[in-house]
Image 1: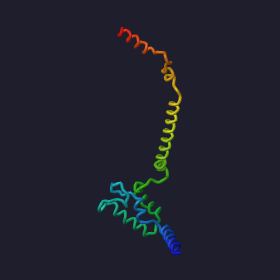
Image 2: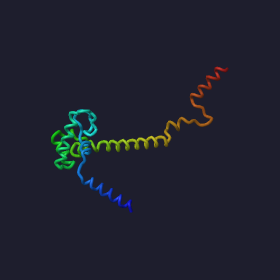
Image 3: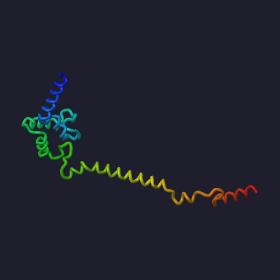
Image 4: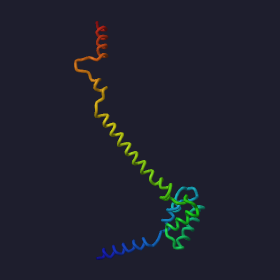
Length: 156
């Protein structure tokens, strides 16, 4: 009984958090620090960073206005440009940034499979060279006959 009540309380708490709007950390992680460190605003580890500190204050102001995550990010994108977003949008040319790695991976996989099949087929069927290179037992090749003549001349 207690377990059921605890699970119900946890489920209601999770639902309340999901509807509570964006967290400060979520938005910090969605924005790139402009100090040149290449990290998100949340991960920037520069003491007294001239970019992260004002951005954090601006995030707090936007959240105090009651804006949701998309609205806050749209505000920052409009003010600073798309470079402030930590991940490219999925619109226009940026869609290429999302799809190209998967397309390249698939093309590479197809290329590997085709190459392995070609190598396997080539190793399974005998070629004209391998058939001609196998002499009949008892029959000497031209090189072996020449060697035999030279050895007989040397011994004799």
